Image 1 (cartoon, rainbow, N blue to C red):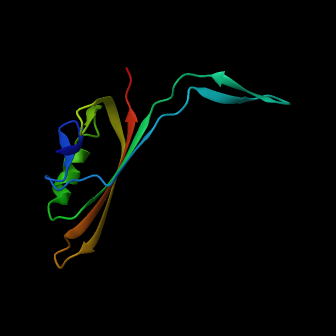
Image 2: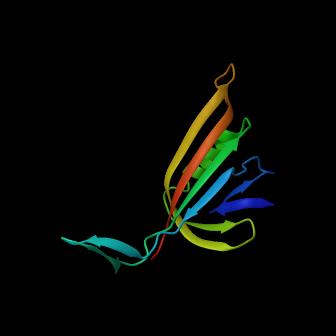
Length: 122
C-alpha cells in the first residue's frame, strides 16, 4: 500500500519512502476588511489550498528518491492519496532536504524531506 502519489512518485513504506506527517490547509473564502472605526467580512473567493508533507527516510538510496521529487517541480502534478482519492493537481512550492547521521563516505543514514505543495487551478 502507498501513502500518497505525486505525479509518478509514490510515497510508501515498501519503497522506503514513508510519510511521517501530512497536513492540508483549506483557507476560508472571507477576508477581513478594515474600516476607519470598524471592520467587516467580505467574500474574496476561495484561496488556493496547501499541502505540507514531512518524511524521514532511513536508507542509503534516499538521495535518488529526493532527486526524483526534484524533477516534479517544473510542472503541476496529479496527486492522489493512499485510498485512491484524487486530490487534483498541485505544484511543488518548496522541497527541503536535510541529511544527518553521515557515515565515513558522506552518505546520510537519515534524510529528512519536507514538501510544500499549492493547489493548481486553471
